[in-house]
Length: 430
Image (cartoon, rainbow, N blue to C red):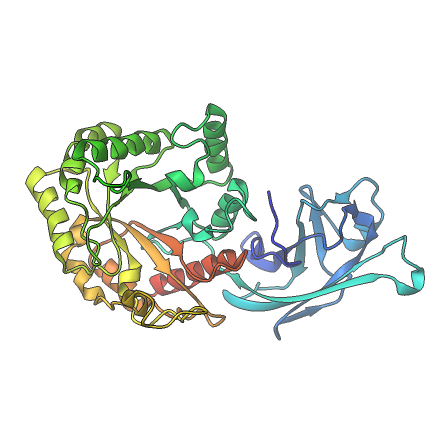
């Protein structure tokens, strides 16, 4: 497990219960020193949450290794340690718990450093951070998941597999997407040990595999295109691996031949050659409808034509909610509107169009870019989008796909905000 650099961790912020009562809340803190130390050296932590909570250092209780201590009890222990690699769990009593949403949490942590003169002790570490307390449980409308693509640039640098899966579970999500070539070491032949680790972590964090991302790289060789047989072989390789890892959906990213993402003509034969295998494995192939391709488009018509003509149950549509973006993504450093793709300003598909294709949709990637401290999405109009999905009868996964600023660890808090936002909206839909 890896920890965030901040003293206050995004994961682990939740209300706690005693029976049917909410009795307080928890947060997790990283050891701020350069070394681990005996937990008896802790002099307490004062915690403030906006204007709601302000407790002095002796009040919160501490949990290490599954055992909870009052500050007085902790200071009398021998052998209990706060190591660098373990976040301490701090529980603050607060009858009724905190309301769902983004809170400004401030801490003042005190540690006694024996090698620093006593007149300069205790050492005090102060930090304030906005973190999201999400709702408990689901609302019965949709299922919720996260794509590990959300952690791009973090994964393999500041997040490992277990840390990423733990963060997914901490949102209350139950499903996880991966990218075969992004998250499977030794792809396309992972070791038996890694597969055992994969299933062990899924069990540990109560997660189920949902959608597996794969590629049909039609420009694999310079000077010639991929044949339909080669495309089918690439797809079937990933169907088999996805099945070994427990996935029920496979999203093939098929090479395109136009700026509106018309797929290479080999897609039809490559997919049809693979339908029998998909049926045998119990896997659904689902290419994504992704901006700048709207719902009303020949690409979508062609996918539906294949379903109707073959009668297959092993091919469907994946909707990327980026198609509903109706406000521009802010320009990045050095960008101008003329030098970047126009679709980044949003193509604004009408959510009502979803009803026309709903019966073919098997999965939804909940694409987003930025949700602010007021839980307002800056690009995606979630209220009409989620209403359209529910009204059309969709009750499958909404799988978070964060594609915003890639500052290290920012994705963790953004995912928490999205789950809080969409689950709150979903609970109030007609």
